[in-house]
Length: 489
Image (tube, rainbow, N blue to C red; front, side):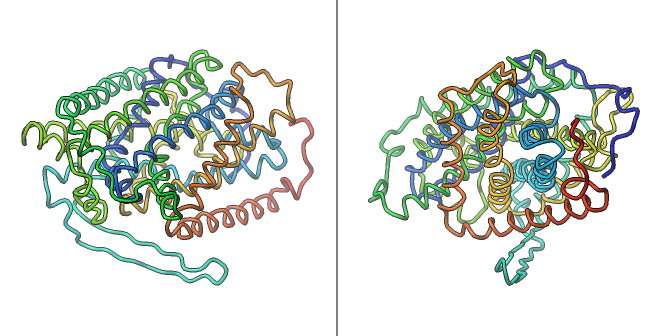
């Protein structure tokens, strides 16, 4: 982690080659991915019945609220890095902002590979429909480390045939991304067509075989406003939050988007609206064909999560199940592709500022993309493929909410107060209500779930470790808060 080299200004820059269509397509394939196809048993398990649809409805509302935060910040400060750039500028680039932006990059070293790994694990889960032997467990281990002030930190890993498939997916996505952004923009549109085709087929099949009695087969007391109801809703919203995440992906590519002041907000809000409608209709269609009690059992066992395959098999037979399984796997790969593209630009931006490892700022001399950052991200994501899907999802959502999303939503309000003169091509609608609702929703997800302490312990440990590392680096290099602040920055 060194200061940027003197000739950085002469290094080849990034290409603004992504229009509104490409940006929206990337967001949508990132949002959809494998999440809604494989997490339905998990979200049903959280609330114990089809009332779990509330998780997707409320999750969509909070996605819009938080999307408005990203839209204003992305339009005002377009550039590679997304939250890294926003947090740094909001809280002062050479003061508190340097610490907070470092902590963001530090948590991203865990949450970004976790996010990519969930897509790879989900793809491997659907591959098990073709080859059931992929779910055979060859090795598994649970470890518990007791820390007096934090409690028990639990970690587990598992090795199956699907683990090798997931790691292979990481490698393939990295290989395909090893090229210039203009080619990637065209490829994203092709993947978008495949994703929309898959969703469209599922919705058509469900609507033409809709069983309303089965879709609305609520268990007794499903909507009783008890403590258990709200605890279940918190767990369902955590999964729904994971399923919707990706609407902000375009913000990480600000240096490569045409007319970012207008196209970033448009791509954000358009992708949220379209994907929310698709999710709600698609999941209702699946509930109308596959009994929710069967899916509930799959969620408890963490096997057989390929509910869309069962869905098509019941309607059209085995041939349709095989076809849709392949399409879902392609959709999952498209999500991994989009995630790796966006996240690889964040350490690159931090390294250019001298706030992370200098090697990650290197741009490929021919294709002009941050190739070292991309390769590092792929390697760490492959290592996280040894986790169980449910554990990986919970860990990444809690870590990111605590160390990124909450601080950023508060930061938008801070920026309005500190820099009212800042040009804002897009302003949050009904400010500050959406930001306050996003903050409240994130806090609800963090603390209104069963066993919420497990992931919170990891998030707090990561936060404290990041603080220690930053303070040590700052002390060694004479930076804030130990050195003299450069008032010109």
